[in-house]
Amino acid sequence: MTRAPSHPVKPAPSKARPRDPLAAGARDAAQNRAAGHNYFLLEKYEAGVALRGTEVKSIREGKANLKDAYGIIQNGEAFLLNAHIGAYSHGSSNNHEALRTRKLLLHQEEIQKLTGKTQQKGLTLIPTRLYFRNGRVKCELAVARGKQHWDKRETERRREADREARAAVARGKKS
Image (cartoon, rainbow, N blue to C red; front, top):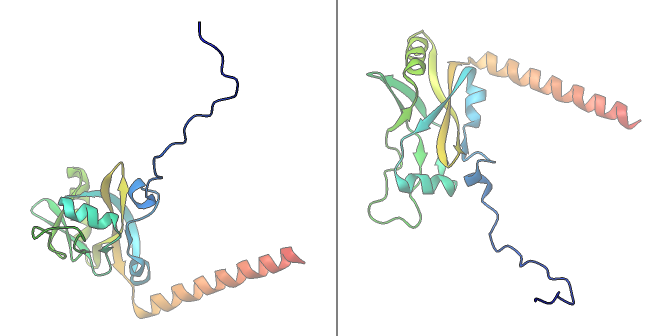
């Protein structure tokens, strides 16, 4: 027969570290902030990216940059060009090239839609962000049309007007 303990026993605290928000998918690994400024983003698609192991580890470290990147469709396949993924800090001599062309993984119907859209004059594929979903790297691609200089000024004017309106509403609530 076992004796009941004389004092309450607390379970041992868990030693598991909280997961990195980047790796858990709670935060974007890379964002292309200039895309919204330089282009009208019309439609967005989610694509997987075919990467090497050191590239995934570099993205987890936050060493990805999409600023000058763009997408193309060639021979029924989608590719990501000019996306810079820095070298992995603990990599060996077999580290990846920073600016290599990477294959995008899309369904065939999506590739056909994108082919039709990118053949229209003035439309292109721009990656807007890289993020993790279920441990896999995903790239958000946008079908985009370039902005003229006056479009950018108009967008900035609208943004400033919205900001002033929000500030006026906040001042009205305070008094």
